[in-house]
Length: 147
Image (cartoon, rainbow, N blue to C red; front, side, top):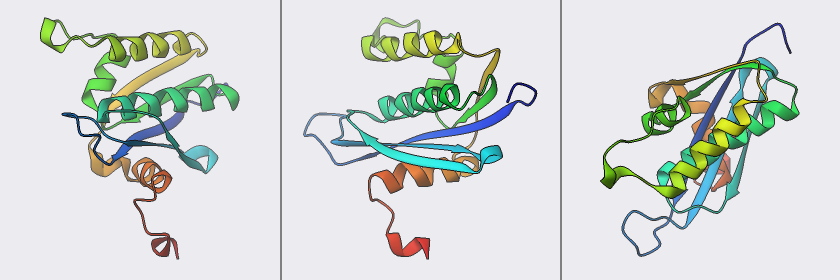
């Protein structure tokens, strides 16, 4: 895997409402690696859309490490997560978030495992396959659609 830069798409999906402002009851993660013909989704605990997006990126990074990928570009449709993955934290006090800071720190630790890694924001329409896997994990897609 060393010679080629591998593209990895990640996305998070949410379902349900916890009764608190901005919180959800279920989170689905999706990862798609076209060069490996690999896609997968899983459900995890989480309470927000941003958390779903961050957890999807982290899972994608962990999968890349397991698969021996050392050079990669991640594509996400979350500007917030891409900005944080690229080292930008919000500067206004009201936007600081300890949970999101912890996810950003985890991304920075995982980045050490790669020889080359970049993060890019893409429009939602260009992230449909990762989105599909994140929604499949939450059963938001009718299995009849697969036929």
